[in-house]
Length: 340
Image (cartoon, rainbow, N blue to C red; front, side, top):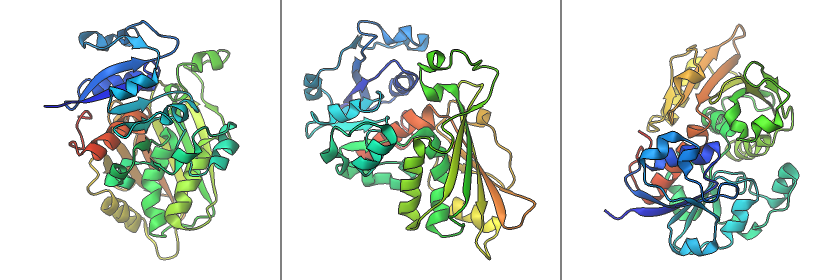
C-alpha cells in the first residue's frame, strides 16, 4: 500500500514527540523527515525512549527543497514559523499547523493578540480552522489546516452545539480551565523556575489570554451574535490534561435535559466525544493518553444556571490527536487510524 510521506517541523517539543508516537503506528503514513533547530543531528529517541524501537530519520534543519519529497507537513513550531513555510507550499502539499499561525481569520487580530505581523496574509483565506467534529470533511477543500488551541478545544466542543441552537444566554459565560504544565511547552521550566510547578496552582493570562481570540471568533460565528465571556486559565501541578468548568445561564424554557439531549444529538457520530449522564463528575485521569473529550452537564442550586465539565488530554485531543483526525478526514482514512 502506498504511504503518504510526512515531514514534522518542531519534532522535539512535547507536541512534536507526541505526534511522532502516534504517527509511527499510522498505517498510511511514513515519516520521512524530522526537522528541528537546536536538536540537529540527534535521534528523536533521545527525547522519548519509546521511539527507540522505530526506524526514524535523524533530526535535520528544515529546507524548502524537502517539500518536493513529502505530501504532508506537520508544524509544531513557535508562532510565526509555519507562516514562512506556507509560502513555499506546492500543490501536492498539505500543511497541518499546530501553532496559532492560521487560527484567526483576520491578520489584524493576529497582530493584536500575538504582537507580531502575519507573514503570509494571502494564505489566511486558503486555510481552515478545523475542530474535526465541527468541520468534518470540509478540510478536503483546504491545503492549510489550522488545529485549534488546547483550551479552545475543550471549550468549543461543548459550547458550539448550544450557541448554534440558541439555548444559552450569551452575555455572561464564565470559563475556568486548568491545564497540565506540558501545555506551556518544554520552556516552562525556565519560565517558571522560581515557582514550584509540581506543588502549586497558578492563574495566568487573566482576562487577556491569547486563546480568548479564537474562542470569541468561533462562538460569534456559530451564534451569529455578540458574545460576552470571561476565560481564566490555570497551570496545575500535573504534566498533562485539561479540565474546563463552564458556567452558563439557560434561556427561558430550556431544561438541563434539553441541553444534554442537544449535545448527544450533535455529537452522536463523533466517536471521540462522550456525553456522560447528567451530574457526572469527571477528571483529567479519565482522558489521559486518549483522543477523547468527556462532557458532563451539571445542575446547580439555581434552576436557570448549569455547569458544563469538559476534559481532554491537551497533548492529544488538544493537539496531535486532532491534527491526525484532520489528516484522516482530508485523505479519507479511517477516522480512528493512528488514534486507537
